[in-house]
Amino acid sequence: ELKQRRESGNGGSESTEKLEASKETDTIQILSARVTALEEQLACAKECIANLTTEDMSEDEKTIFLKKKAKVDNNTYYFTSYSHYAIHETMLKDTVRTKAYEDAIMKNSATLFKDKVVLDIGCGTGVLSIFAAKAGAKKVIAVDGSEIIREARNIIDANGLSGTITCVRGMIETLLEKEELPLGPGEKVDVIVSEWMGYALFFETMLPSVMKARDAVMDRVGGTMFPNKASIHLEGASDTWLDYWDDVHGIDMTPMKHRIGTELLVEGSVEIVDKENVSTNRVELVGFDLNTCKDTDLDFEAHFELYPLLSDNGNVVNGGRVDKLVISFDIDFDLPN
Image 1: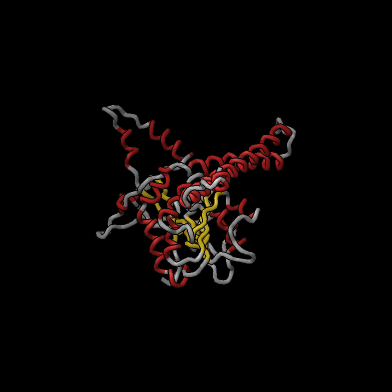
Image 2: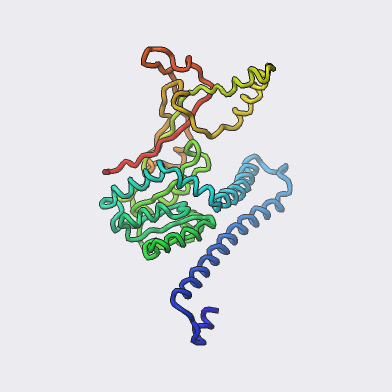
């Protein structure tokens, strides 16, 4: 339609043409992502048809089959969930985390970002890409596999940074395989910035995907992951809410404690633990140098010892009561500034 208007001399304003081109790009990327998802689902369906039952499969064949099926389901769930505004609002309102990224980027602008090439994996609304562009990066590639990439592109354009930041929709593994990242021949990435962390660091984590990009396109001499250090920690805490069941309207319901405890062992909860409820020391289970660690390093066993905390007057904090183990993580920007 745009071509016909141009040929007829009714092409409209330049801004209208840019808007049409932007919509066309959005549509192409959305359709491309849907085609990729359908291809994965079709491949899974073909396997299901070829193997109507797994009874005749060996254990290895069953494992491979189930992993492929789970991967398709997980990818669909993951990218669909990140298309909703609420999750992005929650992350942006986590001012401690967002400000930490902003400070680390801006305070190291001269040494790490000025005139550099930056890759933002899982860019969401594009906030980290915008920080990198403001820090002087000459090229920023913002990648996301969900439909939020459309809003990211519009946000970037509204802030006058579309000349520096290029938004690309897709899974980073697919983009690497098909060489669809906007990099010139032999061009490398100086900084890979990403907010890949999940609950307890590794739940729903994007780290393996980010590491693939690191190994494929990051400059191995002067390049860096951002952040570049991570560690997982453990501590014990008291939780008196279970005591509610000791007396419910004058009724002893303590048998409910066992049921609730059994359910909690199956699935952990995500919550804020107040400092006064912490009963033990905090130990580091494992640490990672994100510039060098391997995928196999992410599976680990760790021995640990917890000790009761003592108050200033020498008393055992919370009577030494430990109702739950609290997993937390630290992310570090181990940088000059």
